[in-house]
Amino acid sequence: MAESRSGAAARRALGATGEQLAAEWYEGSGYEVLDRNWRCRQGEIDLVCRRGATVVVCEVKTRASVAFGAPVEAVTGTKQRRIRRLAAQWLRDHSVGCSEVRFDVAAVRDGRVRVVQGAF
Image 1 (cartoon, rainbow, N blue to C red):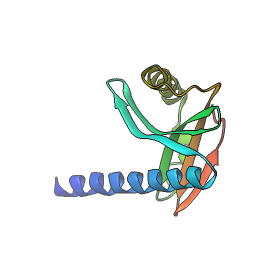
Image 2: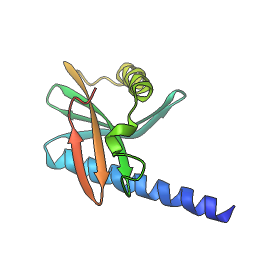
Image 3: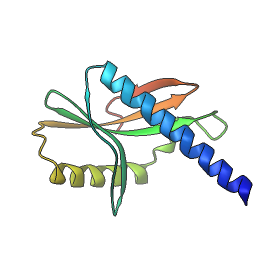
Image 4: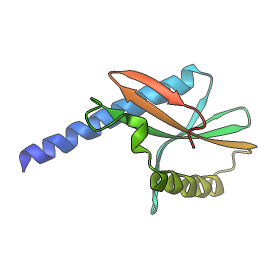
């Protein structure tokens, strides 16, 4: 049981590191990070960023290896639909005055961030 807990803790730490690196990538690219790990009953959005009138909802996928596939492959159609619903709720809850919403996937592996803009 302890092995399972330590494995879960390691995965959480890896995910948190990936989200931090992705947030730094957005900030370094001129975006303002509006929200991180926003939660509601239906789920969680990893990052919400803005540059100008564009709000970006970003799903961050961090992997230690590609043994289970590339990080981007983990964002299935079901996950995309959930993120879209969550984004609609986030936008209802926040007055950000945007004219465009974009959905990105940030793939983090070996400390490197690759952002697929407009991934879905």
